[in-house]
Length: 180
Image 1: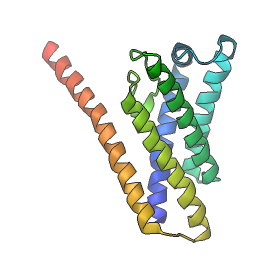
Image 2: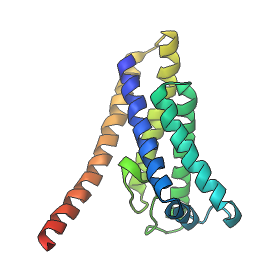
Image 3: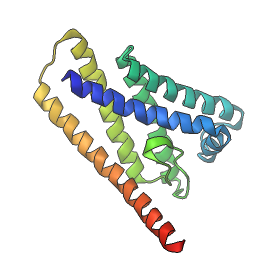
Image 4: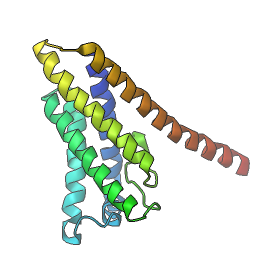
């Protein structure tokens, strides 16, 4: 069980770290993505962009180091909920040509309901990390088999969503090779 939580922590840490580092490398692009969502007032765009990247980076580092991991799982789930709400608002506005601004290992795509589902799965993984992380520290695990099945389900759904991105990369690479 401890090993599963370790894998979960590292998996989510890599998502947050890779995303935050890519955003740090081009903060102007990231601030542009935040602006394009038309949710944050213009005077707060810089603060929102820096806060977002900082929280993602700290969450990734905190999960890797294992320091107060329930806190960092909580921050991660809150970040993902904010992203999901922002995507949902814009989808309901009819905007589908908007870049998600996700970056990192999860890629950068136009917003869609698939991204909403992906983020819900990631929030579920963070919540499982909070639950199991707290009980593993105390060595008390209740109804572990049910929660393990739930973790396996969320993992399979997330793997499915990732394979959708891999297909796009393969199509692009094949197109690139043909046109060369």
